[in-house]
Length: 219
Image 1 (cartoon, rainbow, N blue to C red):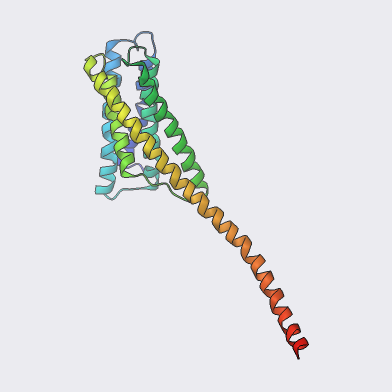
Image 2 (cartoon, rainbow, N blue to C red):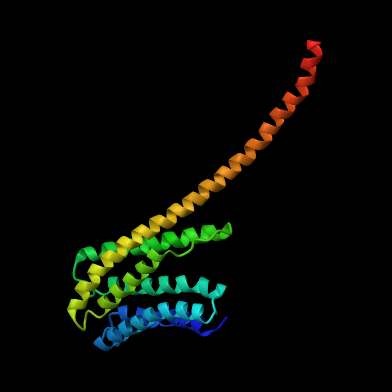
């Protein structure tokens, strides 16, 4: 269970507190040094998101633990960066930037709820390629925004990419919702079919019993 790919995944979770404290508005966490330190940690953690999956497949070390932990680590990392950006007043330029932040957070909560529901009924919700692109855009956008104090131009580009990520986030969230809804509809159809069959069987038995009586009277 504790192979290198899983250790890389765990490392993303381990650095989250160090990134989060950069939102505090008192020394030493409100300094330029700590802001850059948090940004570098976020970039490094984002890179591990690629390598843990790549190494797990290349070394044939895929595991249920890794499949469970990987999306959780991604959501915690992205969610922490979003909180930091919202908490620090100088982290974004345009007020409307809170809209994609809101969309991303709501989608992550929605998908987490859908996965929990489907897990209870032993159904999966596999990650799509578009969802992987969504995660990539999110991490690149947030990395740029976290380096705002180094060069404000990163923030402009980051905020634009965050809007792109929000659009992909909305699309993939709707796709996951639709897949879950299709599963629910299929389950309801099976239940309705199971309820109809006994009723049809009773009607058939009644008709079968009446048939000989009808023939007897005909004679």
